[in-house]
Length: 248
Image (cartoon, rainbow, N blue to C red; front, side, top):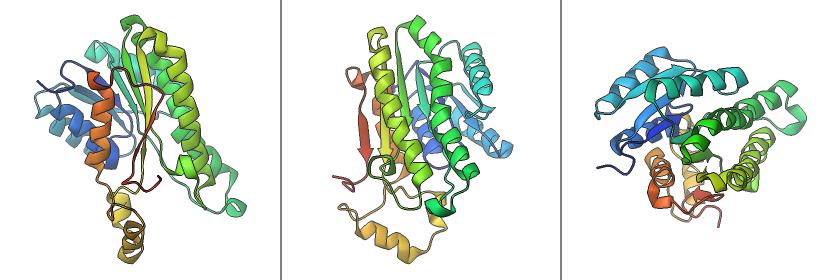
């Protein structure tokens, strides 16, 4: 029996990196997994097959979580297809980095829309189902950048910081219905996105982390398994940093 046996999870932005790692760990722990992807249909189909191999129900949905109506339709489809929704993981995120004086309005709006508004959209859509069940775990992926800020990432930092305030508010509003809401704040995690960066730069980042290494996507996924499971039944409104003591 896995830690998430019998639970249905919806994970946004799961075609690569951290989202993909969460989907795989959830399937390994026995959860039925619904996930979204935006661009690659092939990647979505491949992940669906990979997850189903664990003997659970898996389905990918091509959906833009930053679109209010699309998020509502997505949640309705998941509940119709799976019969329930127990865990919601908001992982969809983008970066459009630039110094503030060079940042376009479009780059600001896009990042706030995809990273922050998507959380509002999916949580609002999932609330009715979770309230009816008098149970649920919502996990929003934020970032250490949302806690400390970062030059060249004013839009990203604002979106990720907003997720923290949103998470705490949702925990206060829905706690009486036995619905928990927490945030996970990854530090420097080594994914496809970081693999293309200059090795010397990456090593410099590793050296600045007390644990002297970058994190793996699976290490973020493990924190999400804990927060999605009944092991964290009295934990809500928290921000769990997965950062190797980078921000301590």
